[in-house]
Length: 421
Image 1: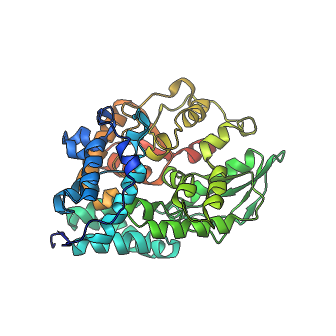
Image 2: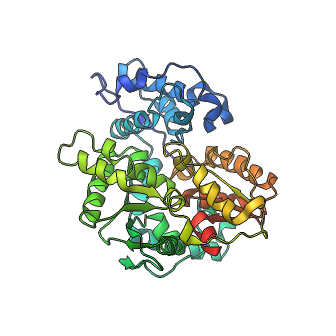
Image 3: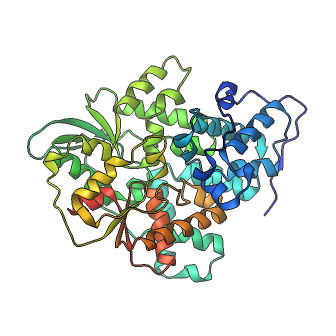
């Protein structure tokens, strides 16, 4: 594998960082105990305030964009746990995405990382048909237990592939059951649509049971999260415009998403399209309607008739992009407790990242595995039989970790858990 090298340049760095946003950081250190990578390494360069210092140093031309600097930026999960505890309101996610956008345009990566990021992640994951074709041989290899003869990276990647969860394609329209209360749109997602299609079906059923007609526009595509988080803001904006157009004119009360990482980006279309006079306001209007399935159902709980069950001990893992940028932590717990009652048990470090972080477990497998082990040990300590979460990446990461640990604990998406009740 070739080593990544910086691109030499005699010119001053292009302006990529919003300095006002970066100077909001007063380096108080309150974010340190919430940063998963700092908790693991204890290295100040792997903390939010340390990375902001690196970003400013690169912007000022005081620090080269070399392998060491890039490694510390790459090691950030983008979980935004620091934002949730920051007393100064630092918009760390904005700073990180713009720094990574600059990095990907000016830094020469190794051949392996270039193929992984620019081809596998950007050309396959956001496209349903391509992803289905790509994971078919992986599922076959897993079924044949070929993972035992594969190198560690390939083995880890293969462990994330779930068994076939293929259900019927979502209908463009699904009518409310019972008393009709309104009309909502549904974002089917990329990974959710291919790897968790039955979860999507259960989500629509829950919305129908809550009294809502559900519209699923065929023209919709990737929300742009994969591009934004990996440093391709141009493609993220392109995705945003396409989705805004796909849902235009549908007369919707809300637009529902059941994937936390996607939801975070969908709710920030206005900021993503900032400065685009033709699209910024349309982005804000679109984002104002976006609701995570848990926050929407908590506002419409009565028609669901969730049945209290005392049969299983249940815990809950906070998906990073639901808990931190969206500040949604109570609603999913309330829904789970409506079913589990006193059998609900809190998970230690529930809001510490599991190591999935979109495609982080592919680009930074070593740190991802460390965080996966930390999460699995905490889940096992609860004595729960089921762990519920709200994001496909978390589900894949936690299921793979439980399997490696030889645990029989079942990991479920909250839509599947509620539908079973």
